[in-house]
Length: 140
Image 1 (tube, rainbow, N blue to C red):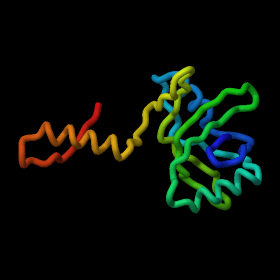
Image 2 (cartoon, rainbow, N blue to C red; image 1 turned 60 degrees about the vertical axis):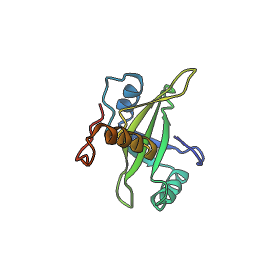
Image 3 (cartoon, rainbow, N blue to C red; image 1 turned 180 degrees about the horizontal axis):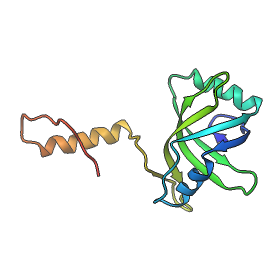
């Protein structure tokens, strides 16, 4: 596994990897809701322990490579469960598809930057009659 700012991390099994890899290659495929990390090495456990205490940066972009066939999947994840006697689970927020020569594309993300939300709200505010407030916003 690769994460920015961390050494290479190793684990025996990543449950949900196959669905993440398929979703990274096929926009019509559903990504897994979670990735479960099993059999973590000492460095991976130490890094996860520091991430669990980091209240500033809860989202991470994680690239997982299966050594058997070098297949990769990259996802934006948050720590869903972690601790003694609990399988470490990562909630998948989005799957990143490699862009080839261009930038990578994020698929099925429920995560938007503050700037994107502000821009959507500005568009909505101009579409409403003066004095009315929006009670909901749908972006398709």
